[in-house]
Image (tube, rainbow, N blue to C red; front, side, top):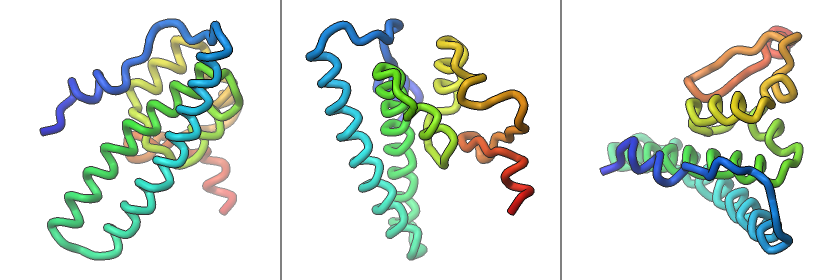
Amino acid sequence: MWDATDHKRLTTAPDSYSVATKELEEAVGCLMRFLEEKRIWVEQDMRKAESSVSLEQDEKIQNALKMLDIVDTALLKSYMVAGGPQVGALLRNVNYCNLEETESLLIKHKVCDRIFPSSQPWLVLNDSTIANISFMYSL
């Protein structure tokens, strides 16, 4: 059975986010590519399961959401290690990152203002999705 300690154990990252060697840089790059592909596969499986209503499909959806939580949170941490612009791209779009861990990482590494400018109104939706309110009103 899945519990909070499993999530913490699977998504906890070291305190240091600097790439020290070429090998580590390459490993993080491979991990990011794997996680990006895994994310696509799991989302596709979840969409297929959403198309039919049954108890078995509901369980598949719940398992997919748990997997997406782990994949997106690990992907976020990988992007932070790499130091690229992908952090903002991941968080500005629909994602399944663990909200508490994401908030903690962004505050710890002081990147909130770069990703979510305070000059724009933001809203947290469904405990994990952050939306730009001015964009929503422009639709």
